[in-house]
Image (cartoon, rainbow, N blue to C red; front, top):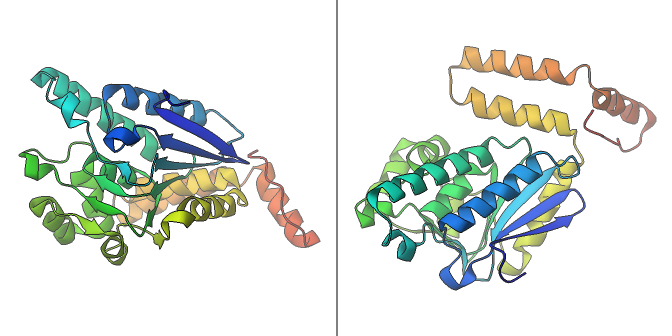
Length: 260
C-alpha cells in the first residue's frame, strides 16, 4: 500500500481517505490530485458510504499544499492546469452528495487549508497549524481560499490571514470558527469517526438535501435561500425513510434508514 497516493479504509458506512505522501508532508502533485479525484468519484456512487473523512498520513501534516518541487518544474501553462484541476476537485468535494469531515492532523497550509475549507466539518489535532500562506510566495490562494475563508470566518479575519500569510494554531482556528473541534492527536480519527457515525444514524436523503440547501442558500439572499430549503424539504416527503422515521418514533425503536 506504500505506493498508493490515496489510502481508503472503510469503517461501517464511513470511508476514510488518507493523503499518502508523508515524506513531503502530503503535498499535492498532479498524481495525488488525480488519485483523490478518482477516490471521490468512486465514493459518490457508493451507496454503502454515507460519510467521508479526509486526513493525512503520518503525524506531522494533513497537507502542506502544492508540491513546490514539482511546481518549480512546471511551465506557466502547466501551473494554470494544476490550479484549474485542484480548484475543480475541491469544488467536487464541497458538492459531494455526502458529508465530508476534514481530520486535520498537523500542518495544513495553502492548499491544505483550502482542502479543509471544501469539507463540511473540520476537526483538528492540538498540533495542527493552518493558514493561507500563498501571498508569501507572491501568489494568492487559487483553490477557493479567497472565497470560502471569508464565508466561514468573516471578511476581516480572512483578509488578515491571507494578507499576512500567517499560520494559526489549532486553538486560534477554533476560536475564529475555522475548525469545529480540537482533539488530542491520538484521538483525532476516533473522534472524527464518532461524529461520522452520529451522522450515519440520520436519514441519508435528508442529509444530502440539508447539505445542498445550506451550501446553495449561502450563495444567495434569504428569500431565495428559503425557496431552496422548501424544494429540498419537498424531496424528503415521499421517501420511505421519512415514513420509517415516524414509525420508529411511534414504536420507540431506532430507525433503519435505507436512503430510499
